[in-house]
Image 1 (cartoon, one colour):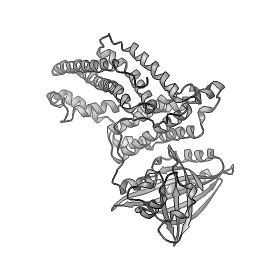
Image 2 (cartoon, rainbow, N blue to C red):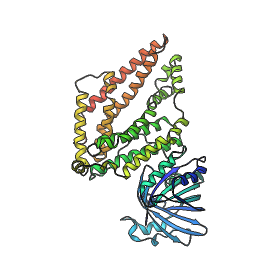
Image 3 (cartoon, rainbow, N blue to C red):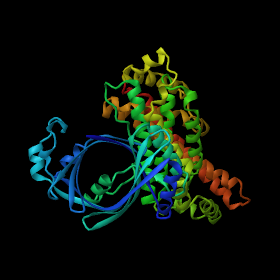
Image 4 (cartoon, rainbow, N blue to C red):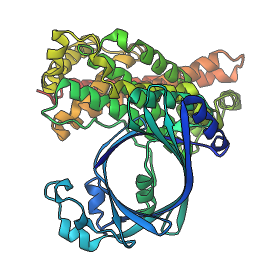
Length: 506
């Protein structure tokens, strides 16, 4: 068995010719192996039983020699792939599952039935160029450049990726090489394997953005440290997923999901501050703040686009005032373009951030300078932490938004950050509790937060009107104020309902 420790990069055609020189610059010695034409077939049952177990089964042929490979469930963190892998030679193109050691299979797997029903569901065919690098410290790293295609159901997707794998030595050198590579524009960390992409094509399930941030998958017996790892890992993958979704189909709402993922990671550093020393995350937190600032325009852009849509209830009214429509159009014209955003996701600073987060997890960097108090806190059941945290947040929220007080537009705009952080705590730890009770409690508060988003945009439009020297826009200001008042009234109803709800963690 081999356990892969590799980083994957998606490269552009312009970057491919630069790769040999980049590798030579980094290593003490570089051995260039002959290129190979690899023909691969991936197998599963009609019911995708191997996929359900997170098992990959592949045959690979090159120059009349074939082998079969099993990849078992592993980890993918920020482009770092770690999976147990087993390889055996075969005489034909059909795999033989019984040839593998019986001890590798997950408990309860129906091996006999699966072996009888597997068939090829997609193929990958590519030219592989390979280099073996040795660093000054003796670390050996294999770099492979694959260029070709994935084929399934008559559809084709290109393969253009570079993988660097630690063969022997210190993983520090693997990350140093990764940093060296991402200095080049056009190279970004990749999340999805060839197999994952192939399954999507074969099953006609294209990658789609999430509607919401979702909940971090946690087991009830998880420790606080395990919950930290799960939360930051979830956030990194959420960001990278929606980065790829944006490349597939640019959308403002997809960028909002990127923002949600960044916010979740930032929140995790605060949430687990009794085991994460603030000074050890300062650099990463500053970079997360930078990335949020680069995307700060997105929420207003979403609302402006919504208001100018013919399907929106406000469209007819706003369309009566060409002066305001003109102002909105001018604002939309200066928004970053899809090309600008793709450049952001390709830039060195962004990819260094993803790489830094990955390394922070792999190195367990939060353990640095731990004292006995932090060590004890890390081993505590996360359920204990969650109950205490939610109680504290709930009491703070009731003080901030007293039930007997009637809140104004200004009041709601001031509490957005606190409400969002409270909901993010639920995204981090809510999986520990009953789904229906959690949903019933959170839904009215989510409605309030969405109301605040819309209220901010109405306020923004109101300010735009005030800044224009136009009598016609006076009427718009009156109308916008009426809409804001109506929205605040609806939010007050949701808030009052929320205050009466039974907390789901009790």
